[in-house]
Image 1 (cartoon, rainbow, N blue to C red):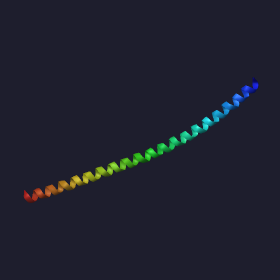
Image 2: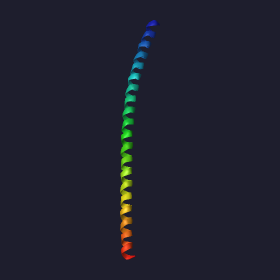
Image 3: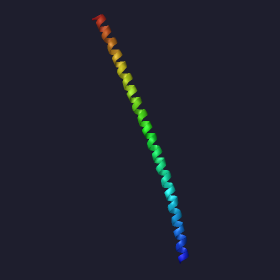
Image 4: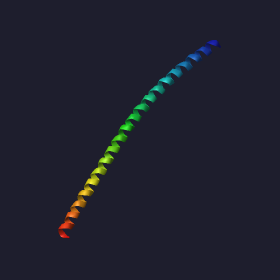
Length: 74
């Protein structure tokens, strides 16, 4: 009986160690994924701001051209 308990104890300790290793790997993967998502989020923000800036510039340019035409023909 004692030998069976010792074998079971050794098995459980081995499983526990494997679980801890897997948990550490998953935590590292989680940290890497979090960092990657932050990078992607930053890139999205920059691109959205740039698109908005270009749209504002285009809108302003078109308005100035329309105003200039109105002044010529007005």
